[in-house]
Structures are given as structure tokens and as C-alpha cells.
Length: 168
Image 1 (cartoon, rainbow, N blue to C red):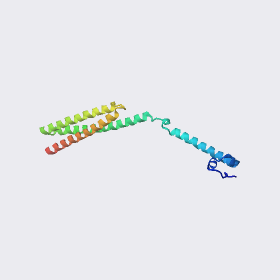
Image 2: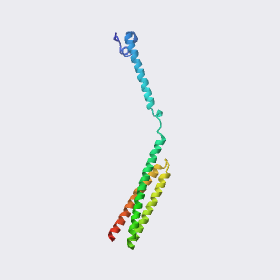
Image 3: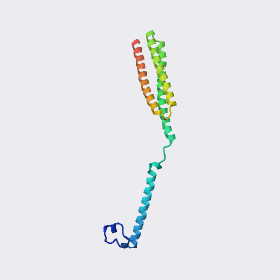
Image 4: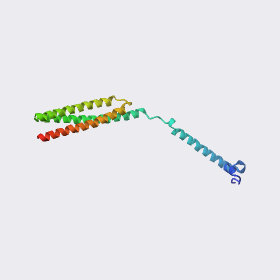
């Protein structure tokens, strides 16, 4: 098997045919064939990876994620509503056994809790009625309202606790 004979750089680089025998030429053809296969496979891979050939994400998947977010916020609102109901029931029990001054304070606290419960109902309606376009704004507003409601709920609970402890 003859190797490429000495020559200038370009002749050696391009394996000029006049310097090659059949075995070297056959090996060169095989090498070229494999290089062409590799280039073809690379082009196919590049075509598949190209953004224009990617499949767009399934809209129903995105919609399901939106529904999961809505469900999570609705659960949080329901939990807060249940906590307010428990506090209202507790207020009713304490009101029966309290004097006039404490009854007025408990009545005031009850009104504040009922206002917060109405706010929860409004927030739940906002969550249910939100669209994909308005969801980000609704989510931010409802989260802010939830935080405000929790703070107010804590204040009312603390005030009730302080009044009951003072009079007990």
C-alpha cells in the first residue's frame, strides 16, 4: 500500500489522485462516504433542533397549570373562610356569656369578620371569572387581599383575646 508521495502542501492536503494507488483511493472514498453520512446526520439533527421545527407547547397543558394556580388560591381562600367561620362561631358563644361592653366589642369584631368574609367571596369570584389574559393581575390582587385579610383576622382575634382575658 503506497502512501501519498511527497509534494506541496495542497497536493498532500487534497490527496491528489495521481499519487494514489487503488487501496488508498478506496480508503479515501470510504472516508469521504462516512464524512458525508456524518454531515447528513448533523444537518438532520440541526433541522430537528431548530426553533421553527419544534412543536409548540400544548395549550391545554398551560391551561391546566393555570387551573392548578386558580385551585391553589381558591383553597387558600376557602381555608381563610373556614377560619373566619370558626371565629364567628366562637364569637357567638362568647357573646352569650359576656357583659354589655364586651358584647359591643364582640359585635364590632363580628362585623369586621363578616366584611372580611365578604371580601373572600369577592376574591373567589374574581379567581373563578378570571381569564388567561387577566390571571396575572387577578392573582397579584387576590394574593394582596389574602395577606390583608390574614392581618385583619389576626388583629380581630387578638382584640377578642385581650378583651376576654381582661374581663375573665
